[in-house]
Amino acid sequence: MPNRLDNDSSYKLLFSHPEMVRDLILGFVHGDWVARLDFSTMEKVNGLFVGDEFRDREDDVIWRLRFGDAWLYVYILLEFQTWIDDFMPLRVGDYMFSLYQDLRKAKQLPDKKLPPILPVVIYTGKQKWDAPLDVNEMIVPLPGLDVYQLHMRYLLLDVTTMAESELESLRNLAAVLFRLEKSRSVETVRELVNTLQEWLQAPEQASLRRAFAIWLRRVLLPKRLPKSEIPEITNLYEVGTMLAETVQEWVKPWMDQGRQEGRQEGRQEGRQEGRQEEAAAMLLKQMRRKFGPTPDGVIDKVRSANLERIEIWSDNFVFANSIEEVFAS
Image (cartoon, rainbow, N blue to C red):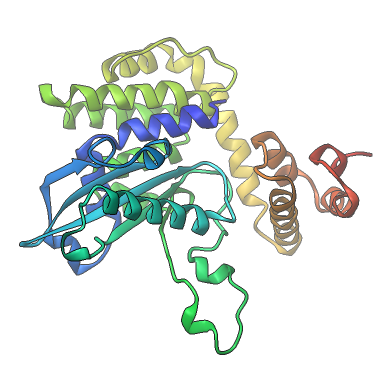
């Protein structure tokens, strides 16, 4: 299985290319103002003029581009998540205030006005995202003080909830990436890799082709084929060739995984299955808030357990000091 560092760094590499950011905005950010963005003016902020404190933040991909006729820039902050962070509004707010401070120190604030920021969180984990979207949701309400409280919201792109039909209708690089994340068959991956080869033929797109190949090698294929040894690959053509040559060898474990996930989704049907899913989600949420990020193996164990077993673990959780104690006999 890929680790979080591989996932974050691979996504960061992909969205270090302007084509990916452009397609992400055009395909998944809605509003009349998007039509006024001048994508030909896109510049990466990292390293341009940000200060030492902000440069230390390696999780971010930040771009700027002109907005309409004015010299107004929209800053797009991207955060890549494989696990649910209940304090994401605080993290995003911290990044935004740090960026504003760096712009002020670099004297990049004309007329002492702050540029708007579009904070985007791309989530590719297994569970549906249920963390707050606005820092105001985390503040205890107190009558009379509401007007003084912060409102700072980020745009969540939860890949797990995106409909395949919508993604398929878009001729869009970001949509292809998200379709690959949701893929459940070798044939689908081969088809989408061929699509990328067709769209990214220009010599100046060689770096983006390589970024997709790295993401496939480090992130997607290890997730889909955890027991297979993935050879080193450096470009999309090698990925396509490898999938074609080994399709017979790999189809069975891939399809077995797909059937297993299908059975898990099928448990949502019926009253008993619904109770099991609700109990599993609640236990995982409580564990995450008490012990921090939950390992994928633990998530799979809880989600695949029957209702009786989950209830036992929920009782254990009350007095548990670690994840291990939750599952103790």
